[in-house]
Amino acid sequence: MPLFDGLSAGHIVPVGRKWSLDAPSKPNFIFIMTDDQDLHMNSIQYQPAVQSHFAEEGTFFSKHYCTISICCPSRVSLLTGKAAHNANVTDVSLPYGGYPKFVSEGWNEKYLPVWLQEAGYNTFYTGKLMNGHSVETYNKPFPKGWNGTNFLIDPNTYIYYNSSTQRDRETPTQNPGVYSTDVIASSAVGFLDDALKADGPFFLGVAPIAPHAETKHLENGGVAFYDPIPADRHKHLFPDIKVPRTPNFNPDVPSGGGFIKTLERLNETVVEYNDGFYRARLQALQAVDDLIESTMQWLYDHPDILDNTYLIYTTDNGYHIGQHRLPPGKTCNLEEDVNIPFFIRGPGVEKGKIVSDATTHTDIVPTLFELAGIPLHDDFDGEPIPVTDKMQRDVPRRSEHINVEFWGPGLFEGIYSPSGSGLAPGDGLINVMGPNNTYKQVRIVNDDYDVSYTVWCSNEHELYDMKLDPFQMNNLLADGSNVQTFYGHNMNRFVSRVDALLLTLKACVGQVCTRPWETLHPEGNVLHLKDAMDPKYDDFYMKQQKKVTFSECANGYLPWLEGALDPVPYNDKDGRVARAGRWEDMT
Image 1 (cartoon, rainbow, N blue to C red):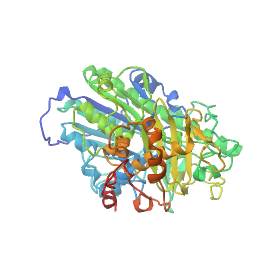
Image 2 (cartoon, rainbow, N blue to C red; image 1 turned 90 degrees about the vertical axis):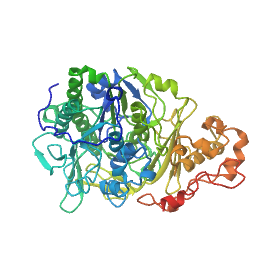
Image 3 (cartoon, rainbow, N blue to C red; image 1 turned 120 degrees about the vertical axis):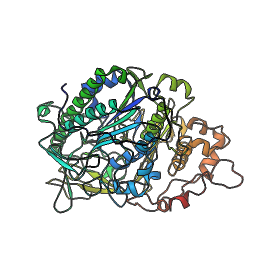
Image 4 (spheres, rainbow, N blue to C red; image 1 turned 30 degrees about the vertical axis):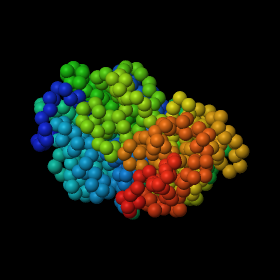
């Protein structure tokens, strides 16, 4: 693939360092993150560069999850190592999210690039940072921690052939007629040249918008979602491709929970539109493959750098198109929305390996710290992913759970409002906020269990056996369900344990998020769900423990509407809660 020769990357901005490091001993990082890329509709199978440079040369983590399925909150969690309920950035725009919320919560002072610079790294970023980073907010203040930047910014972040970019401390410019992903590819290679000239290790973040929908701001203040726009050189590809017809694609019977189970079946016109939307996403990802090829060609030309560099490929959140009768979008408690691609290659990483350990985006910053030899922060809500052989030997055990959360309405994209959603059917471009989609979810993934459990803000419950029902078609807690046993246990006994686990996670901080069973059982003899199923704990879980509840469906994280925030620890004679002071901290 050719190198792109669009925009140059700019100059190095000197950064003061707090201590001296032996630069060659520190690895470099190249972090490539797409926008809204699916795993369960097989998009990575249509990316030969991902297959050859990441799947074959690195390790794929098949059970990697975002912990909130929407762009800005997911990116903030990734960059801070904090769950969304602790970052308190839960939407893409004010009052609950966006770049201004990121700044007002104080994260511009304490997130990944700032910490890496303090550890002696040169840091560069090109592409989308987060929603709300715009021509009006880009310098209020500038994002901290970067030696060099070339950001995509609103309102033209999602315009493929006329993006707005803002480099270093310069004023924003537009790029008419230049394909957005090619702009990012050129910047990435330029920043690699800059990193080569600088003293010390480097981190390069590369964030193209593909395969996100083309998004335009309307005169009436609304936002319209069009099909993604591929580069001209790719728009002829995959002419007959369709959304995979999995069992949950436009099913004959309703499925899912919350508002999802109320949706009517899609007609042929909508299905055909969805197939075209899916095709455009795959076409748009081909330029990302070109970006990967240009980056890898630079690294192959500099083998000493390649040998000391970790490369990560992931996305901010997953995506659905037609599953459970839904229009294109994300935000839901579905495997399509939360289980996402994650690949890593580099020193000590096994080639061609697939790992099924439960991992999340809140684990990424701790992982980079571990690889770079930087002391972990006590308040990280994630833990290092054992990506190398050495880390796998040194880590005695991994968490078995993923904590997923969401607040506010779901987001419908495309040109058709879903029938049954309470909205008028669409006959034009829409950015429709659907019914309230607030929920708390825990995924449990280990050798013994593969479970999805959700409590909606309506206090409806969902439970799926993901081994037998990976497409989430049969909610075992739905009204009328008469399922009595689950994984060989009485259903009520099992649900009492997973509800307590979710309660422990819903407002967790730090190690409580990674070791929740130790909060429920401070004596230390319960480390996994399997341990908690011991019958001697039945009275504790079924009669003494608090339950996950909501008193109202809110558009943001308002903890006083979310019932109990801390569990009762087992055999706690003094009546203390597991983590006193949470209420004061959050309100």
